[in-house]
Image 1 (cartoon, helix red, strand yellow):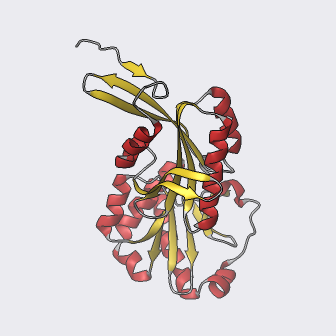
Image 2 (cartoon, rainbow, N blue to C red):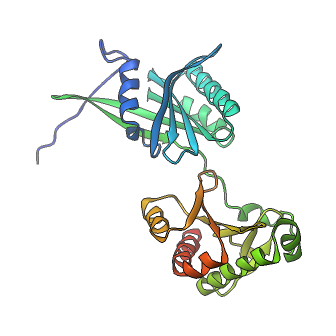
Image 3 (tube, rainbow, N blue to C red):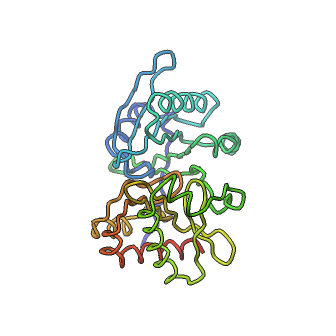
Length: 288
């Protein structure tokens, strides 16, 4: 097959393809950014005293928002400051969402990337580089994520210094004897996966230890009227389909910690035991 050399062009120096054009293209098809299943919430969003946010996207499931700033050419300091400022305004005004700042530019320089990296982990930042390719039919765009948000570590990393509690604390303060008994049912499933798995009672959750070390492939949070199971798995279509087909009562996907959060009752655990075992085994293996 004949190799065809692609012709890249500079949008910044192009006579007709402007930043507004690029903004409109992304707004019409946000999937091209590669930041997830998002929908357009607003564009040219006015922030008094700060200017206009280019694009605001929201996760299709409604839990996350992305403040997107576009710049033709190479990134610069003012672009970074403006992006962070819009992100900060939005997160303060709408704290119920998980907010992520996104910088889109034609050239994200190594120096600029180093500066952005200093913020990442404190400010959730993504940097996406766009390349324009000229063809006989028009101009194509290729988006490459050159910096993603830092994924937080496992709860295990901290557990040895976490405040330990006991079963009585969960039965009397956070949950009830009935809801803590649901934890035992999940432990039974976990021990089928690894007989050495045992419960670890912490102030904010009940997790697992294996051979004397934290191994939180899943955690449980008993409440007064039920229990929340949080399974550590990357969000993907296969797992989504498994949960949807089983008709589990999923609360949401915690993007910050990478967990599926599922509400359980004794009846649900009994009826959906095989599906829960499949998900827990997958999380156990992924954690290894």
